[in-house]
Amino acid sequence: MGQPDAVWAQDPAPAAEAAPLLKTTPYLQAMSQDSVIITWHTSRPAYSWVNYRPEGSTEPPLTAISSTYGLKDVGLVQKIRLSNLEPGVTYTYSINSREVTKIRPYQFTFGGNITVREKNGKPLTFTTWPEKADTFSFVMINDLHDGIQKHENLINVTDVSTAEFVCYNGDIVTDKNDGDAAIKFFLQTPLDTYAWEKPFFMLRGNHETRGAFARNLHEFFPTQNNQFYYTFTYGDVFFVNLDCGEDKPDDSSEYGGLVDFDSYRSEQVEWLKKVVQLPAYKNARYRVFFCHIPPAGGGEQNVEVDIIKPDGTRQAVTDFSRAWHGDIEVRDKFLPFLFDNKADLLLCGHLHRLVNYEFRRGKDILPVLVNSHVDGLRVDISPERIFMKVINQQGEELITREVLPREEQEANAGGAIRVGPILIQ
Image 1 (spheres, helix red, strand yellow):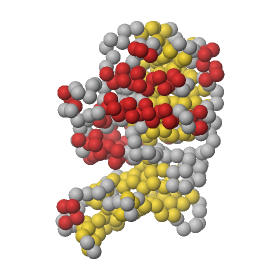
Image 2: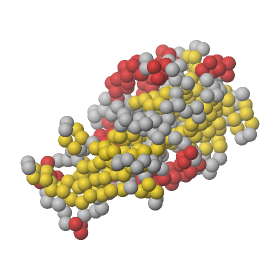
Image 3: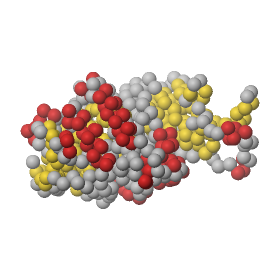
C-alpha cells in the first residue's frame, strides 16, 4: 500500500480541486468464522482504521488498524483485518480514513478525515459465519467480461440476498490496465447491492492475468493466505479455490515472456498435498472445488467424460484433440487430487456455454458443472444433498442437479437432473 517518494514530497492540492477522499464504500473479503477483511478505496493516500462491536453492545467499540513492519499502512486501497471475532455474531462497524499528504523525517502533513457508519440509511453490519450450519446457500457467477447489466440481472435472479456468499469464478475483471476500470465495470455492482454486509470471493480466470492491472489485482481482493489459491469452510463444507492461470503455454507470443503459470500450477500441487491432510478436509461433509478452466479428459489419467443432457441422457466425450494447454494442465495436475481425495464437486466456467459433465476414473466419479457466461448458479447445501440450479437472466431454470453424500454417489452415478417439474434419475 506504499506510494512513490514523490507523493510525499508534493504539497497537497487546493481543497477546491480535490476529489472526495472516499472513493468506494466498504466490501467484505476473506470472511470466516472468526475474522473478515474490510476493504475500501480512497482517492488519495490515507491511513485507516475500523471501529466495531457486537450489534446491540453498549461497550466501547474495538479498533482495528493495518500495519506492516510497525508502520501503519498508507495507500489508496484500505484493507483492515478484524480478528478474534465470535462465530455467528452480527457486528456493527464504521470505516475511517485520514489523508496523508506529506511524510518527511519528523514532519507530517495530513488532510481531511472520513467516517462511514451507514449504507442506504442503515448501520453497517456483517455477521461472522457459524461454527455449525446444516443448510446454507451460495451463488456462483463467472465470465462477466465487464457486463454490468448482466451482473445486476444475475444477482437478482439467483437471489443473492438469501445466499451466504458469492463466488466470482474467473474472467470477471477482464484485461484491465488500471483499478478504476475494475471498479467501474465490476466492483461498483456489489458495492451497490450487497458487499458491505455479505462477502464475495474473487477467483482469477485467464483474463484476470492480462493487462497492467493484473499485477495489482491482489490489492483489491485480499485473501486469508495472500494467495489466489486458498481454502475456506462454511459449517462442515470444505471449499478449495484453485487458480488456473493462463490457457495457453507460457511461451505463447501473447504473454511476451512475462508469465510462469506452468510452475505456478505445480506450486499448487504441492500445496494441495498439504490441504488434503487437514482435519477439516478429512472430516468435511462435502468438498467443493472451484477452478475457472475445466479439465480435459483422457490423457495418462485415463479419465472418461460424459455430458449429461437436459433430458437425462448421456453423451460420451472421446475427442480431446482440441483441448488447450490450460485444460490439459488442470487435468494432469489438479484432477488426480480431486479423484484421489474424494472431491464431491468441481465448479468451472471459461467455456461460455453450460455443460453438465460427469468425470470418471475407474470407479471414481466426479460431478463437474461448467456454468455459461450468461447464466447464474445457485447452490443450496443440506445434509441430504448439494442442489444446484442454473438460472438465466430472465429467472428461468435451465437445469438442476443434485450431488448426494459420498456414500450414496456410487449407487446414484451422476446425481439427478431435473428439467422443469420432471425429475430424471
